[in-house]
Length: 416
Image (cartoon, rainbow, N blue to C red; front, side, top):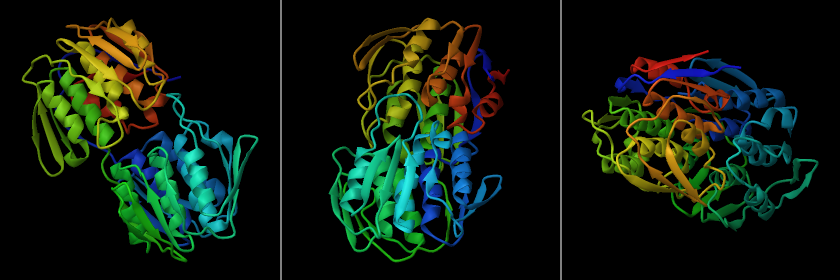
């Protein structure tokens, strides 16, 4: 099994390019099932979750052509609606196949998904929304079995603004009979991007990016070309890594508009920022950052996917800060690993009290989920001595060549 070995060796400096967003690419790939015509996608990140998603489509009968970051999916010859557990047990995003399969083929047999063990992420919102559109759904032996001769438009309000449930219902409603109105929708930019794709395929969608989305169903959708937007979490991860190591970096091929809350916290920590249309420059001036309080909440507030990275930054910062996790109940598993490196962190329920230290010490640690692995890398880059990170397959689920990119910024990092 691969490990990552990092020797802390000072500030990160230089320029780094951000890959396409995994969380935007996954619903785009699922949307290819809505049409018999080819879907051409560019800027696709080379991460494990994308590979798993494409393997699932091939299992269903789709033809996939991939060259670098370009991807073409042909879904004309789908011969199965069965999405097996063996292929989805490591990836939460597999639930996104449920709506498109049901909308186009009238049935779906999708395993309950896996993914990071960061807390409960129930599928009840997906099921309730599809049932409101006329689907007959039951769960049997770990599979969601759904049928509908044709979905019909519905008025549905989410109890909780779930990103994947919002995406699933938008895709299902795009081919439904009649108009659907979805209320209390998630606001993440990946949802607006999916709506742009569906409109380019002939879909009729208004309000994406707001809490109320209206979809007028059409009989068929056609092929399209689409570019995956930049990964806002990868962007934030590189910026925090530079801040923690007292570095000076320029992140390119990104979108600062997706990260207002994160950028505000970095400025509050003492980093100097300059922004362009597709770049962000962070400079610490070689100074240690100040501790910053964090409260995670749905977009556009502070993202839960950046909580672990800021935990590592606070562990190295000057002062004391609180980190409150309001989204996932098990998303503090990285704390024990940071404590192995000497971090002074006290847990009180959903709150972590972090007392910053001048330096951490390298140690053998274990990644427990995708973003936890990033926090351990950040801590290791700023620690004294060697850190060995185990279970790096978590990292590869969502970061495209992060070790290579960090090495180009001056990090002493390698796989063993």
